[in-house]
Image (cartoon, rainbow, N blue to C red):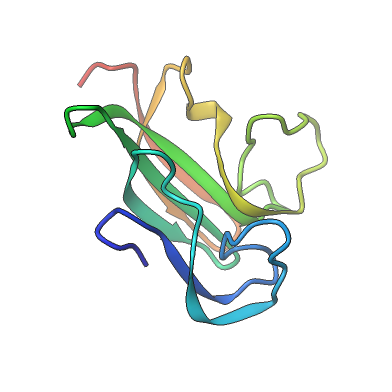
Length: 138
């Protein structure tokens, strides 16, 4: 649930951190919507996708003139046992997947200076997909 792109809210099952409430908020479920730490700074939520036990979100930063920046940021949280939450900054590379992520983290593969600019994201039962374009070319 978003408040016109200004604030994310979540409720329901949280066994794998899929609500994105953060570390220290390890409740297994939540009946009332709780605010997320997303979007951050001056960003707005562009889209949200929910899998069985993970969540993806696209945000776009706003510049000082109130216009949206071109590059969106892909965030992921929740069950990550099959790799569906991708890699966040600071996470180790290797064959062992992170089991869960309790708070939204940006996906490093789509952050600058990556040539892949995210346009949309989708979440399946245990997988994620991101549609991108190469660079700032439209």
